[in-house]
Length: 182
Image (tube, rainbow, N blue to C red; front, side, top):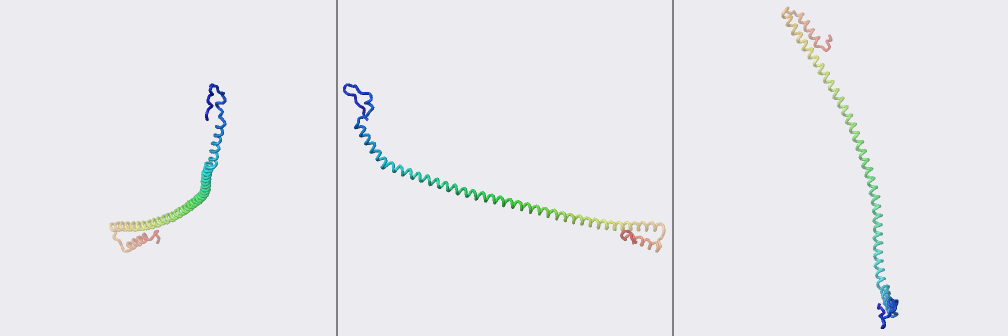
């Protein structure tokens, strides 16, 4: 734009400086119309096309993200279901193992009880047999000692007769019988 030059006398209206002349307005309007036509005919369609492509791309990405989100939800539900099933199965296995362990412990206790009862019974039998044997040995030893002692006494005091020897043998035989029965 051009400003109005001061006229010859140097006096100018203050408003005229800011208002352009009619040919300047006309040519400015022509340039603006040409730019607007070029903008609408060439630039705006390209801009719209680019914006539509970007919009389509963004919508595609949003759709893909939604699809992935739905797929992830499905996998999450499947995972949680399988995790729940695995936890149930593990709990079942643990309970079964505990029951089997309890049964094994009970069987071991029962077997140990039977074994200990058998050992105790065997020990009692062995003790009784040892007692009977010890008692028999003791009776025999006492009889032998008594016989030797009696023999020594009789040798010292009297010469034994056959009847006396028979009495001693009878006495010794009675000692060797269990419980001193005749």
